[in-house]
Image 1 (tube, helix red, strand yellow):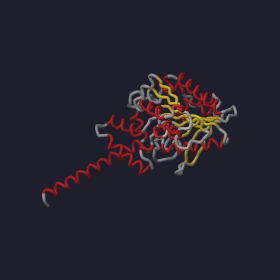
Image 2 (cartoon, one colour):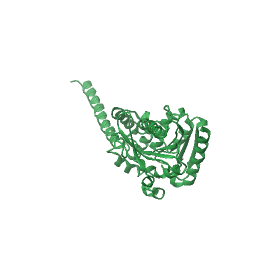
Image 3 (cartoon, one colour):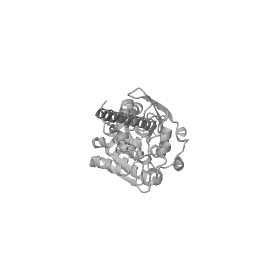
Image 4 (cartoon, helix red, strand yellow):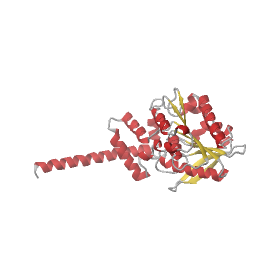
Amino acid sequence: MNFQTKIIIFILGLILFSIAILTIICSTYFFYALTRKGLSKMKKKILTFKNIPSAESFKPFIDHNWFKNHNASQLHITSYDNLKLSGIFVRNAKPSKNIVILSHGYTASASAMLCYTSYYYNKGFNILSVDNRCHGESEGKYLGMGYLDHFDILKWIDKSKEILGNDCKIILHGVSMGAATVCITAGDNLPKNVKCIVSDCAYDRIAVVYKHVIKSSTKILATPIIKGTSLICKLLAGYYFSDAAPINFVSKTPVPILYIHGDKDTFVPSYMVDNLFNATPTDKRDILLIKGAGHGESVIIDNQSYFNKIDNFIDKILYISQ
C-alpha cells in the first residue's frame, strides 16, 4: 500500500468518523427536542434562558378549577396519521355560534391556556383548548412544531363545525409553538369559518430557534446539527424544519392576524414578529409589542393592554364579517 493510498484511506476514515459523530449528536438532539420522552429535559433547558417566566408567575392569572366550574368536557379527534388527540371544550352558558380554539406552546398542555379562557368566555365564546400532539392527553411520539399540528387544527375546526354548525365563527389563538401552528394554518386552505387569528410570540422559522438554543449550550457549529437533525426529523416524524416556518404561510392568509410579542423575549427574539408582520398582507395584519415582557409573558406583564388590543381587533373583524 503506497503513501497516497494511505492518505485516501485516512481521509475517508476521518469523514466517516465525523459523519458518525454528527449522527450521534443529531440523534441525541432530536430525542431531547422532538420526542415526548425528551420534553421534560428540554423544558428544564428552556427555563435557563433569560426572561422565561416560571409557572409560579402565572398563578395569579389562572384558576385551575375553571374548567371544572364551567362543566368542561373532553373531546377527541383522530389525526390524519391516526393519533387520538384530546381537547377540552366548554359550552358558553349563553347560546353562541362563536368559538375560540386555543393552541398552547412547546412542552405545555391545554390547561396552560387558562390565562385566556375567562376573557373569551365572558365575551360570549365557546372554548376549545386543545392538547397538541405529543403533549398532555394527546397521543404522539414526535412533536410537530407547528407544521404537523396545523393539520390537527384543521381537524379541530371541523370538530367545532360539527358541534356548533357550519355557520359557526372561529378565532384561532395560539402561544409560542401554538402561535406558529395557527400562523401556518392561516396559509393552508383556511376554512371560511375562521374569521381572525391571534398569534402570541410565534417564531418565524423553527430552525432559527433551535440554532439559537444550540449556540447557547455548546461551541459546536450549530448549522450542521440543525441540518442533520432536520433530516432525522423528516425520516422519523415526516417533516423538515424548513416546513415548520410560519413566515412561508402568513403571506397567504385570507384573514387578519394580530401579532403579540414581548420586547424582552430571548427565546423567540422579538425581531421574528417583525419578520412575520412584514410578510403578512398589509390589510391582514396588526401588532402589539408589550414592553418588558419575556417569552409568552405578555398576558401577565400587561394584562389590560393585552386583552384591550384583542378586544378591539376581534370586535372589528366580527362586526365586518356579520
